[in-house]
Image 1 (cartoon, rainbow, N blue to C red):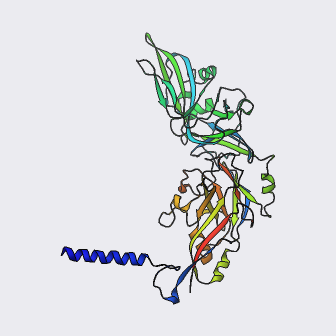
Image 2: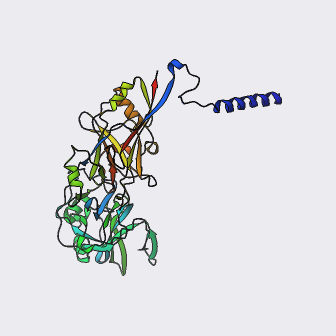
Image 3: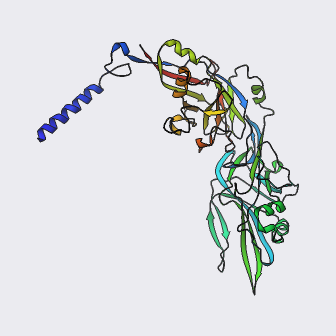
Length: 460
């Protein structure tokens, strides 16, 4: 019985080895010549591309909030500011008897994303908003908020988005202690402002978030460009987890004087938190590129923070049908970064999407919200390959559906997104990344040409 099993196993291994050694240039083995399927390759499909401005976006519900000022030799100047409201923790708090301010600090936790020159120094300033933010208003990134000229807090710093900090933590009844906290920006606020608007606030003002923000109005964070140095950069902040105003004060408690800390969380969603940002392309080649979309340029641009995107079309893709009955085995779009344009690291990730007959954004079939019929993020691609200096997209189903007539081709776009982009949000404008890239166009014969590579099978 043991010998029988051994002989059978040897036979199976031999058959496997023999079959593996066969050499064929066809897809499938031992097929009827009448239905033989062979693979062919082409990378000469025409790609038309142009740079277009991105749409504006509502910033009430950003996952990360940008702050900074950047001077980019290719993309010009980018400026980003944050406006925020506060919440009470808990509502109805009071500062006790005869409170005396010790200090107040605005604590904002980094989202660990930064684009620009990390050695630059920034003069970050806090101002008071002239009007409270409203929960019923959709605030677009193009809407700059009105704020007072007085600086109620400032600090010169670098955006150290990956460095933990040591802070002093108050321990009731025991000595204060030094603790390590996640990367954060800490800006001291003006004592007079805090005393007037918080310690001396009425019980009514401190009874609800709405009444607090009507009285205090909120904070506006911006970078003082004249007091900053270096090319600059854009940092991102997490305003839905632990970011807050901390007020340290002393108050009378019977015969004792207690030192206490009250926190006022900045909880995006509970109260309004918004951002405004804009790009200034003066002195760059971008305006000429934007104003001449009828002529295919040598390269195009993509840029985050509602900046720029690249529009592409495959005008002659349907001509593949003239080859007969074919099936697309693989289609990939290679998007190369133009050499010498990477003074700052190119955007870490791009996505590709299409528009429909109503000019609404839709995912392409290879990258949809249905995991049963689309690729994983990794397999779909769009991540920057620093060794090959390009991005690659797998778009087999998209090209197949266009050829088969399942989808009509309108416009297709390439745009930056965060590396942790969640497709459940849809192919919307991104306000949570600031990266950009100069990429080769589809113009024939130019260096860094954008190429659509297709492997197809023709059924005889």
